[in-house]
Image 1 (cartoon, rainbow, N blue to C red):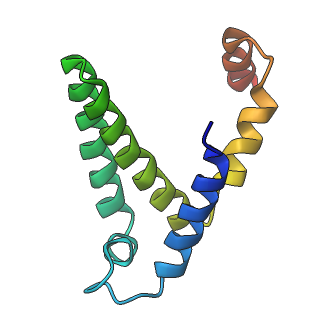
Image 2: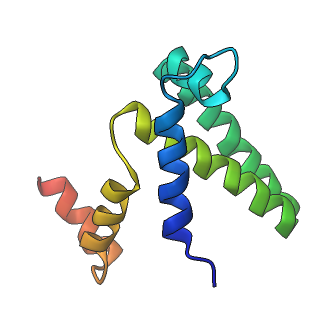
Length: 109
């Protein structure tokens, strides 16, 4: 089994390292320098591609598009000064909770 958390952290580190790169030579730097709207537009595009791949039922295509989406989610996290640690901690906090109960608790906060 692949150590997926390690991959996420390595990618997050690469994204952070490219924050200061020349946008002309780094796709990540170009997105980060383009600001939130540019990143969100790319996330919307990647999300739509995941949906279409799922609708087609092509597992290889789904996997590739999901990888693109996760990568761009990591860029959005970096834009906000967050990392996979933040998301993993939240998932851990929710572990064992009923989705219905967890959602109801958010409404009372």
